[in-house]
Image 1 (cartoon, rainbow, N blue to C red):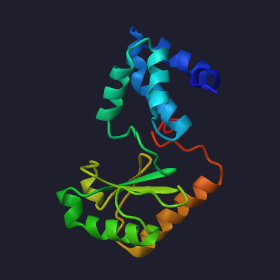
Image 2 (cartoon, rainbow, N blue to C red):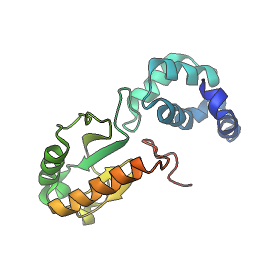
Image 3 (cartoon, rainbow, N blue to C red):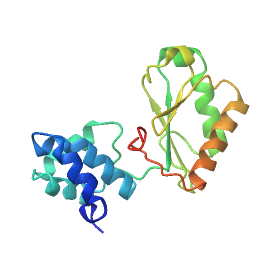
Image 4 (cartoon, rainbow, N blue to C red):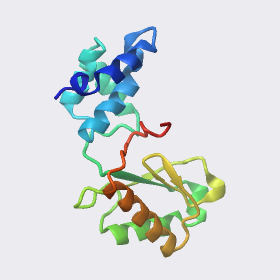
Length: 174
């Protein structure tokens, strides 16, 4: 089923917000990413068709933004800030704990498809370092194994509960 067939009303509403159709590219890419789990070539071409623009333009946008994924990722994308303030406050220990608990390295996804682990620069929450962002939700002061265990358990519970999740943060304001 195509994006327009499944999300037609939402897509039309988004496009109507902009004076130029092509300005809706990011919201439509977020819809495609949530629908397919990541941005396949076919998904990006579908967005290009919806916006009457060359596929190359869509590929360029997708390649530029760090919250757009062109490879499969887990239901939860775990991003750990490793910039200087977080590094001084334990980011490397947090990354090591996540790698050990999840059995994966940075830029890998757990075999069950639940978690992808990434390093990122500056999540702009230095006073609560080390910081983990899970699908755009912040978890602060993760300085003990117990805190890390609690966050992972909460995220797993939420995913298994059937809660609508968005790796792009599409549902964050709803």
